[in-house]
Image 1 (spheres, rainbow, N blue to C red):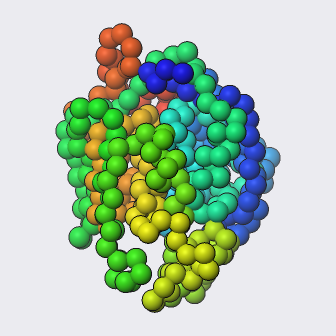
Image 2: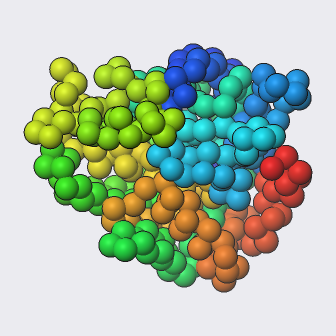
Length: 313
């Protein structure tokens, strides 16, 4: 398969689990989709009886507290999409339809690895159409106190440089940089699990979060050590998971990014916010095709047209 060609799945694959925040069961089916479809979620099982199609796009994000949510509660939403989006983006899948029967994605083991294994089980194939990228032309940066996130131009590919800095000494300060490729994603990022601090559990529960969290799907961090008996999968698993989340959130650009991403003490809000900053000015980016002449289009024109989904928000 040529890397300059859009891709999709060779066949459907189904996964089951519970939502890490809701604790409710969920089933998803990943299905192939045609060229220029992008990634979209089909929310089924709605109380109204009507299914809801939600484009996986930063303009559709409705919440970023502890997880990334697209759509809205009243007409339909899907929460905690970042791990699946990370797996799709990390493996270079451009087009897919994600059917889900509830409001939250299953957390599975807390990483993107189960999604990677599911995608690998059915395989990826070309769509017969040229791949397109969002090429970063000018630096953009957002800040929130000491935290920041930025995108900068580079000659080719997508590079991430993520740094975390927690007061908890078990997590501490850590930084990792990498060039994203399917091989590097599988090897270095996919298996890194979500994490949380034991001291925050009661607060999360009272706020309606982490109701499905357990040692089976979350790295639990105490004051002096990791609570999980198996320990960490990587010595720097915490920062690797932050990269995993960043890959998933930045996939909400709607197309692969050609650029360099850097963050310090970031998170879902900062990841999505830097996309908002990028697309706020048409001079910040171009949309380029992999074959023939380079084509630039307005943001609203790529894919099947975001406007087609506007009525679904």
